[in-house]
Amino acid sequence: MIHQNILGVIGNTPIVRLNALSEALQLNVLMKMESLNPGGSHKVRVASNMIADAERKGVLTRGSGQTIVEPSGGNTGVGLSMCANLYGYNVILVVPDNYSVEKQKLLRLYGAQVILSDSSTGNNSHGEKALELILENSNYVMLNQQRNLANPEVHRRITAQEILDDFPTGQVDAYVAGIGTGGHITGVSEVLTAKWPNMKTYGVEPEQCDLLNDKHCAHEIQGLSIGLVPDVLNLSCIDGMFKVSKQSCMNMALFALRNESLSLGISSAANLVAIEMLASQLPNGSTVLTMAYDGLESYLSDFE
Image (cartoon, rainbow, N blue to C red; front, side, top):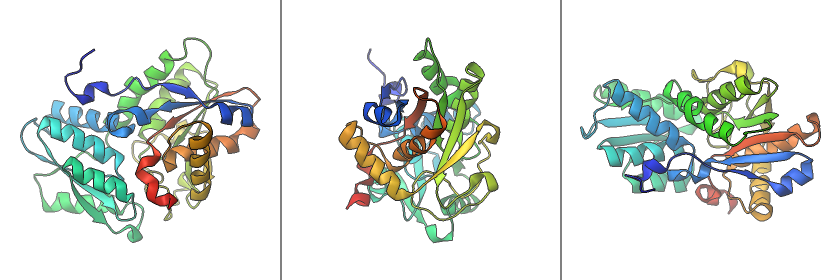
């Protein structure tokens, strides 16, 4: 098949069994490789769907040169930049100043203007800075993935359906996912639990945070716990939460690289740390599904 542009390659990411971890935990650990999407993450699904939704509503017009402003840790920003380059928009991305230097460089190479927010003021510093830019520039458009219903909708309509297609028989016993904007854990869990009512969904957050009690603290795991309870997050989907440390995530990323030959970013490795913690609560042989959001390549400076 010949696609009209790179965005046509989004989706249909494979599910891979993690053999070494499965054997160690006596589980069937599966990972949907969202890192194989164009742009290297699951967020390109969200970015393209938010832009398409805004175009349908007349908020954005292709080829207009309109400016999209978005707070992003990097992956959504990459997706927005890809779409903007193809559809004729400009992009300003507000990124916390403690986030991946590699990702900041990549965003600039894509052509986005990157503005750094002061992370010492809180985990949502980039969201607050983006709102300031919107107030100062009424012609800018912010899609706001934390509140935009097109975020979980794309996961209900497409991502979750891809998973169901990969399970013509059998089912997933537990779904484990990190919580940032809350879009994918909401969209995927809602659809999967409708099909498999006995499936449990577990969220993953940094050890310093407590989302279910609306407690948000500074942390070092990019993409998780964004400093508020996102509007698009369906809390009723969550059966439990696991708290992970950055060091345990880094250790797991190295384990995955050396034992599974999988390149996993810190938040992706966090999912596997949570599965390791969950294992004692599950019967042997249970099937646990999670996602790889992006690869280790964007976080190499963390391992220096």
